[in-house]
Length: 407
Ligand SMILES: Nc1ncnc2c1ncn2[C@@H]1O[C@H](COP(=O)(O)OS(=O)(=O)O)[C@@H](OP(=O)(O)O)[C@H]1O
Image (cartoon, rainbow, N blue to C red; front, top):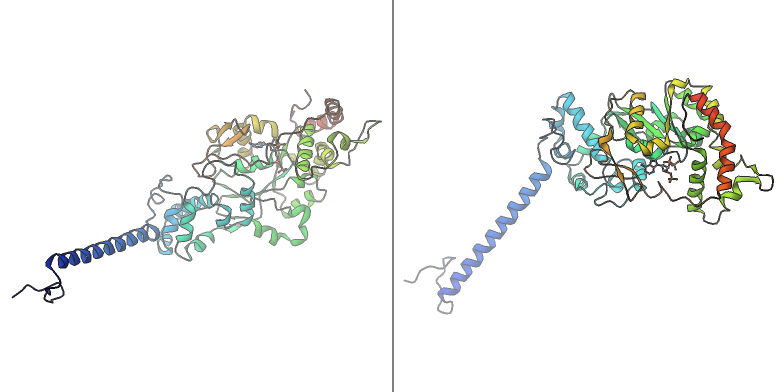
């Protein structure tokens, strides 16, 4: 009796033995491939969905992509985290969130700020692959985590000055784990005051206990109503003003306008009300903003000087860590941001962050920061220096700080 075939059938004379073996082999190969595929799928899924909170539990900040463990764990695991570990996990999550590409960002305002920042550095803010974790996180987990903390009105505001270096200061400060700031400029105290404080608070990022909420809107410094309005929100608000040589500031301001409207008149012609008499046009905002002493008078009617910190825009470029040291002290923060956080980027011509907020990638400000200024007639520059000198000296007296703009 002939042996049975694979399905128990007798091989027919038309089906030779080699063909039957070949069929068996094909069948086995198919099952092997199917098993491999199933195994692969399972392994991928495990990695995505059920990673333990290793590293975060053990205080190892370097373990994996920041926040990945948190995202990978479910609500149950979070609930059993002790308070300290929980805060740490959330801090890491906050830092990690801020590195997401804008499209994946929870906070549209922050996203807007990032958009102007990348310098085309390899990878970019979302290049670490962390973004894919968001898409794969179990539904509801991210929402649950992002609901942690609460939105607070800012306790500290960078109120000016326009083109002083306010973006650099805010971005550098955001490296600090105890600072949470809204990325875009809210313009609440100058343009949207009628929307009310609840609207304003809602723009703020969530903070945990001990974290400071901040924002920056450089136009506040020259807004008449701003001091009284901020004081009405809280008399204890800390105010930071980044100031820069008013002549360079005016040229920087003009350069920005020129980049948007290339057909505007020259800087020289806008500077003078009457070119023959040489009368400076103080109604031109580029000139007016630089009258720091005048603007400061309005603030001092509502805030004591000790509640204001004046940051040198020039020193912020020359010695960012030194200036950040003063700012951290003023805000009552531990000095965490130090020399180690900065490097000088020769291409950019400015100091940049070695790592932006928990990221391993270097980060410079965007191309709208650090523009090349047009050549300005040196006689006009000198005329402006002479014009600003008495105002500068008054400002040095008022603040008790010589910013060195007058030789
Ligand atoms: N680290 C670093 N990188 C790039 N740019 C830096 C930095 N530190 C200070 N600055 C100076 O910041 C100037 C822009 O100031 P602001 O950010 O206050 O401008 S704005 O009012 O928000 O438009 C900008 O002015 P311009 O050079 O005229 O573009 C810079 O000189």
